[in-house]
View 1 (cartoon, rainbow over the protein chains, first blue to last red):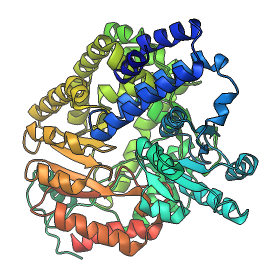
View 2 (cartoon, helix red, strand yellow):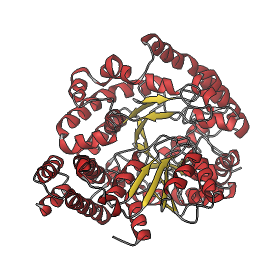
View 3 (cartoon, rainbow over the protein chains, first blue to last red):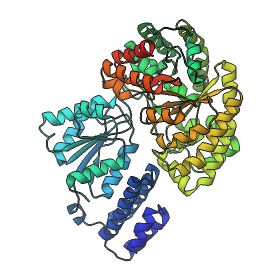
View 4 (cartoon, rainbow over the protein chains, first blue to last red):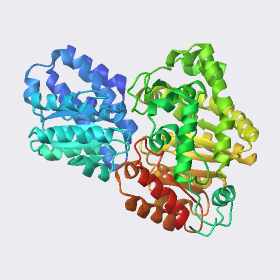
Length: 210
Length: 376
């Protein structure tokens, strides 16, 4: 069953994956075990992407299937789930921008890799990021942008974290269609990418691999 | 100033025809929003008024001295919606957003799976105006008519302003690839699921839209006397989709459209955002000189030159981040590299990667224009 579920997810067989997840949970299997199989499927999809066999579209579809599986498993997942989380990540599309496709993909992929994701949404005022970081003390903060007017908000948020003495304890990531190394330097970020999977790998490398 | 022996239009068309112009033509995409910013006006002012937008362009042209062709115009976000340029719900500065914000497109699943068949039955324009538009706007039919009329009546005033600088519009006919249009209407995730899990309705609908858009845009281009048609796609590249999807849902219709335009002497001006590196070789199949390939700086424009050299003109690609955050000398250096490498032997229109950003530093905009005029 385990191999079948992983294989179905890799082949993007949505109905089959959701059917198997339902069947296994109804049969009384450990939801964490089922979730782990789904994560293995997502990891395999990520590997195919890196090899150039899969594209962002397939990543997007696998992320949607994973979300569907998590929705089925969620009511059955015990508290123990949180003890296995790798790290906390705060994500936001900041003030001036409402584009969230890339951010949403990254959020799902990070969840699939066992990260605890706090997605603040879009058009987020920078002080809200500071509040959230103070509250949950994440290892990562990520900002996404599709228009250049969000750069100033990224810098404002980074500066707020710096002034509050919280910047050293976390890695700041930026991504999205208009971001470049110039923007990374301007914001003072640790990492920049146009590729959600690269973002996931960056987080995995920082926390100690996969 | 480089020695000029051509008019702006001769220079532009020499580049499009892959001949050697007297210098590289300079054609940044300047929509009303960066025009407002460069003119010292708010984005909300131009979002609500064609007159304010024309005023912004007037100031920008006066301040920077004009360039070789106008790409962009004083059209408001709502007018882009009611003329079916952007089939999206809009959030507009001064109405839904603070005055300094860029207008924003709201991507939701406004088109439902059953609408594929409706589009095939009704046609895309009828579907848009009789049904879909009312899902994405609070405007009344009278409002829509008024906005369409405003577009038509304000244009001569803008055109007269351009003529003072010997400038013509780069394009007047403009459309989205049916693939891109459907992705925006369905939303990216739902459209991708349709492509993979229920592709036949998508394919039928792309065929239908292709059939409609060809004669419509030929009529607009011919009627305007500007023998170009802007053709935009931001989502079909190998950044998003495998080549199998591209080959089935995008390329055959692109060839059909470009060939149909070309048979009428109309050049397709592609506006291709995201990274098209893996898709570039397909463009060599188009007739020589039949299209201009506009790139947004995420495609490797230097690779594009290698692939498309002496076959299609390339338009681009000063990055938005460089214009927003860089220094004038960095903009100048990048423009010189474009001119030297992509412009070698002709076939380059110097422009922005996608559009001039709405927070472009004026000194960087000037550096781009002046480098094109003086170094090109």
